[in-house]
Image (cartoon, rainbow, N blue to C red; front, side, top):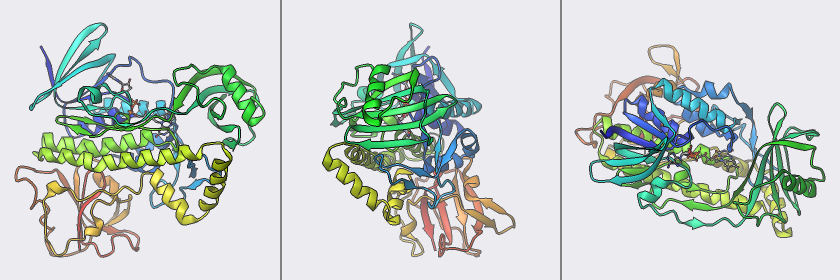
Length: 490
Ligand SMILES: Cc1cc2nc3c(=O)[nH]c(=O)nc-3n(C[C@H](O)[C@H](O)[C@H](O)COP(=O)(O)OP(=O)(O)OC[C@H]3O[C@@H](n4cnc5c(N)ncnc54)[C@H](O)[C@@H]3O)c2cc1C
């Protein structure tokens, strides 16, 4: 007999796993189909940015990740020598966390299992058919067919997403024109400074310690960047390139993983086609500069999870799911643009080297540096008004707050004691925050909502513990489960 779930997620990478956690937290029956039989060992991504740490903190998960990673106060843009400074950003997490992707995925899987997510490894999805009521997924596991019906399906199946193709969603963009090499190796003579990045007319090299006795080497060789993606990297090739660019092979040996990656850049035309939605690399693909793909995928999942749960469990209108495309497609577009800009800076002609020098100077200006750090850190995202909340002409509305993300403020409760803002969002519910002591009732936030929509909401009566600018003039706030402000009133 065919099996039926509320949401089927194709792909158990970081995006699919976090989305599954969000849905399970809300009581949604979710199943993840992952074609790999075992968790990944190699780590493409190594960094977790401030907004992703906030996303984890919104569900009380940050400690698991922080305890396994290493905070670095700076990041890079286009491998420029002037680093991006995260230390002054308006967040609890004023750093990027050095954390291999395999660890991130293991921690997300651990959380998913705690929440009872049905994760099916060794299940490769091959077909998808949707009608007005449901989606049928089918594929193969251990040589046998399987089939499942879901009310909604999310393609979190990476850049070559079969879900995207079967849903008929176009993926326009540009092909690979340049490739770089990656090697996880032992270095007999590692560089004196733990992190090394150098660029010259011959190419660029980055060296990062990965763990005891292992370094990650990333090399872009100006003479070899036309090498096709599918040509396997050899240790000799990596050795020759690093020697040409950096003057030594650093005693490189014992490769654990050698890989080639490129600058193919594409964005899904739509993040939704009927009952099928896309998230993570399935929706956006780009040159991995500035360590952002995994981060944006986690942030996609956070945006989509509560919306799917609201439609399935709270009677929210289906149109709420359209806001997922409206809010995240622009973020994907900005991601592609900034990685293309970084790729342009990672060239080796005299003109590019001159441009790098100019940019190195500009990044010394705190305002410029901060703007880029906030952008890469995912902290500058602001959403338009949620139209499914309906229009309102309340005079006390403060439109300048709509869609803004809130940092994890320390709050002083009116009944006594302090509390972090995010701790009131751990359950994945909406939050009605009353900031001023008043006899006025909380504004009628549900006035414009569908009568059948009963959002799960917490109440908190508290003001910021520190006197400051933030929240000044605000009386009430309706905060979405993802920590963005839906509405604020004086
Ligand atoms: C060299 C390199 C360095 C990078 N560094 C960073 C970094 O520092 N920071 C950062 O944020 N990002 C980085 N990235 C990008 C990051 O690795 C990806 O953005 C991230 O893995 C995307 O996660 P995802 O879950 O969306 O997709 P994926 O990780 O690709 O997961 C998709 C999953 O779907 C499964 N799947 C695919 N097809 C099917 C199917 N038909 N049926 C069932 N399962 C299927 C796959 O097995 C896979 O597990 C880097 C990428 C590269 C190449």
